[in-house]
Amino acid sequence: MAREFRLRSYEFRREREATWHELETLVKQVEKKGIGSLDAAELQRLPTLYRSVLSSLSVARAISLDKNVIQYLEGLSARAYFAIYCRKRFLGKTVLHFFLSTFPASVRRIRWALALSFGVMALGVLAGFVLTMDDPSRFYSFVGAELAGERTPDASREELARVLYTPEESGSELARFATFLFTHNARIGLLCFAVGFVAGVPVLLVLFANGAMLGAMWAIHAAKGLGYDFFAWVMPHGVTELFAVILCGAAGLSLGYGLVFPGRYRRLDNLALRGRHAGALAIGAVLLFFIAALIEGLFRQLVQDVDTRTMVLVTTAILWLAYFSLVGRKRGDAGVLDDAEHVFVRAPEPLPAGDRGAR
View 1 (cartoon, rainbow, N blue to C red):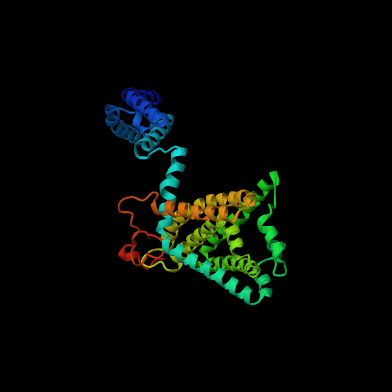
View 2: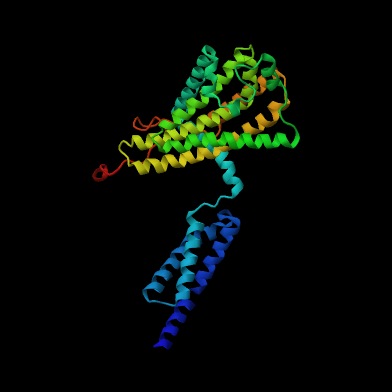
């Protein structure tokens, strides 16, 4: 009986082994050089060989053939599947595709959430500015002592101007300062993204609080006649940094909206789809924070001319506007969403009629 089994296994392999080796050779070529390295005949041959190996695997399992043969065919079938149906993308191309297509398209997809995040932060800036101008003691309600440093309502014009126009760091300390700013600002932005899971309400509070802090700082400088100087000091990096915070806030709002208002869709389906888009936004926002930290920690501390600072903030704003408006836009990429999902992001397919009650 054992001899009969060995003969059957041998005959099975002898009749089909050439096909297996042929497929393995093509798969190795695709894995090393990509599907484009195959000529027309090889491309036509590849799916035929794949189906033949699947058939061999099915027969081998049915007749309880040698375990090693079954494992070999399973591995070869899996590799062939990825070679045929899965497009291989190298790291460089993946990164390039993300920044030239995925990231800007994801930003445009949540433009209504961006508008809301911007409005809430702008309202916070206005509130902090007006309340601090009305009563300077309110400054301490918006700005912590550690962040304020020498910049307080009691500081003289000269003291405030010294902070605006005197480099705070130099050499390696300047690089460490930029690193600190990157981690600090990224933490704030990602907090906005994370708290979106709590119905999105904390996102609005974080955005408003950060806006109020900026408005309060602006107010104490404006009271000493340094309002524009402060604006030119903070906005070269602020254009990038504040947009990154607003972007994280918009991503958090998108998640919260999907959980609170699932509409015709499952909450988990909404969260899964919105989470993919929000994750892409968070990755892009980290890069924006890094760029803002470089501008804040290096350029702003070294360049003291107000006109140069103003030129940088205007140029940065135009570049980001052009990038997010035009890059990665394809024909038909109008971003029009259904009325049930238009607020933040495109939603998944509706539930079957019998499952719409499941949430």
